[in-house]
Image (cartoon, rainbow, N blue to C red; front, side, top):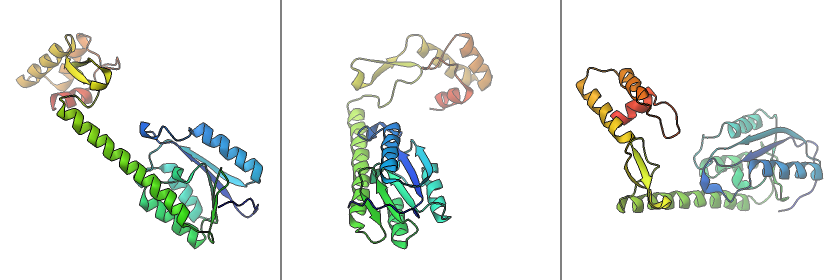
Length: 234
């Protein structure tokens, strides 16, 4: 619903979120969301008290520090309204969606406003807002299922589902993720296993040996003890 009324008693939190996961490519970037919020603030003369942004997934609750800061500020009555690019920026899970709707019904949140001009108040129809939250949650669930299904298909085809680990290299089609032993790395990893089997060398000793052989991680860094421990205990 549309509402352009100005209420000087409303104290807004501008909240922008972009998931850190690639599956949210359709969402506007944080700078774009900020820009749209600033335009809405100027055109509607909004009293923005807080500006929060974060790159976190909203699929699971209790995963967003800045969102939690906003909720705490609402409870402490430092703010009582939210400005957001789209309702799906606020949540993609039923728990936090229900909490926001309840706070709106209780009057702790006086208004949730989108940059498109949609406004939700204590007296407005909350069904549309709940539908937005529900659609966002279902979208995330569908994506999650599709990703899991894709990983199963890859495994059934004998493909590796991650980038090649240390000791291996990828080959063939980039999307197929086929791997094979790397001619330089693999023999050194085998030597590390053999040294560990003797129980005469500490993890630090083996790491220093690999360092002397100039073995690097896939990112070109020295192999850490924690990385080596994961390899030897795989």
